[in-house]
Amino acid sequence: MNRAFDEVKKYVDKAAAINAALSLFDWDNETLAPASAAPHTAKIIGGLSGQYMEIITEPAFIKMVEKCEREGGLSEAEQGILREVKEEIEKLRCIPPQEYRTFSELKAESSRIWAKAREEDNFEAFAPTLEKIVEYQKKFASYRAKEGQQIYDVMLDNYEKEFNMETLDAFFCELKESIVPLLKKAVRESEKIDSGFLSAGYPRHSQERVASFIAAYTGFDFARGVLSVSAHPFTTNLHNHDVRITTHYGKRIDSSIFSVIHEAGHALYELGIREDITLTPVGQGASMGMHESQSRFYENIVGRNEAFWEPIYNEVAEIFGKPLVDVPLPDFIKAINKVKPGLIRTEADELSYSLHVLVRYEMEKLLIEENVPVRDLPEIWDQKYEEYLGIRPENDREGILQDVHWSQGSFGYFPSYALGTAFSAQLYHRMKEIMDFDGLLRAGKLSAITDYLRENVHQYGKLRTSRELIKDMTGEDFNPRYYIEYLEEKFGK
Ligand code: ZN
Image (cartoon, rainbow, N blue to C red; front, side):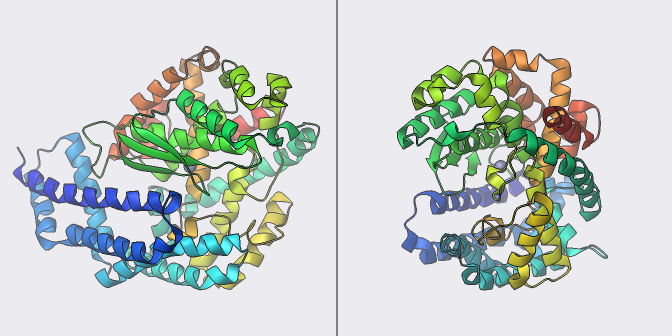
């Protein structure tokens, strides 16, 4: 019996409670909080973040963690918790507490500043805040950088272990070479596809009904979750009995439908985490990439598959009414898979999606490693869109201001979207070998697919890294070829 672990656990529980409160404020900020609350809420968040830091960096706690290691005899879950705790200590103890607190306050206010700037299409209004955020994040990363380690690699490590600029450069290079020629061909083919019926002015209440229906059908458990509305769809996880997702409603019904399926994919992951590790430092998804592998698996591999829609299409079309109710299923499937490069990442088709991520990855490298000034970003962004996607934003709202991530200080996050998509294709390849994937979908048995993922991915939380999970499931290390083959098969035809 490791007595020191019991002591460590007391601190960990306190930190987890503060984290849950912080997550709830995040959720509230994006959904229901009144606009004028922001400055006061920022102070509360600053205070809570400061308390969190105090717990993690308290000398008595660190001593206890060291004692715990010496005592040994820990279970797999306990070892995982200790590993995460040590990492968190290492991350935070090198940052001066006052800097950490000021940055937390800045972060709490910056998403409002960004949202306003975006609404008003005014990058200048956001630029000074972004400059400060970049400065803080670079400073924090430099505190942590090991001898010879580059700053952006430190940031990438926050989101996906065992991937750095070297591996990602090779990954994106392979993607670019395959996708760009494929895209040209697919765009030509897609021009004939009619998708006008997806934005035929369906009433909001129909969209809401379908959103709830699709979430439930995908397996989202409304007894342990909430579906709400926000400008940018996202998922908040407090623990495996409280996972919240949002969507948005606009002109295009597919935008809301696929946001719901995407966020439900994130939610299924969090809801599937084992009871004995929820509310602990290992009680959440293995990494951002693994999380995106699940959300994008449900969104694209499941959700854009005709077999998924067969059992439910009539019911959904019925809710929307005309003109959808007169559109045959194969035409609907073609429309939701139409390839047309656009300016907005979250609305991108499956094929051009990773090019949006590539733009951001290259921008972040410039910003962090090459010290390109924040004020030059809009122009560079527009140039890159022109180069890779053949279109140029007409304003910053559809360009540099479209994503929330940088306002949150999340540099190094974006590659997870492309990596996760590649993970999902590799998992899919394996699943097709051992189960009648489309047959299950056609029979309305999506739960059998989810059970398999819960067994092999979800339950473990952070106990295994994404690469370990992939290896255990497929018998092979991460291999981006499966993603490229998937795209070639689907869009090469
Ligand atoms: Zn996502």
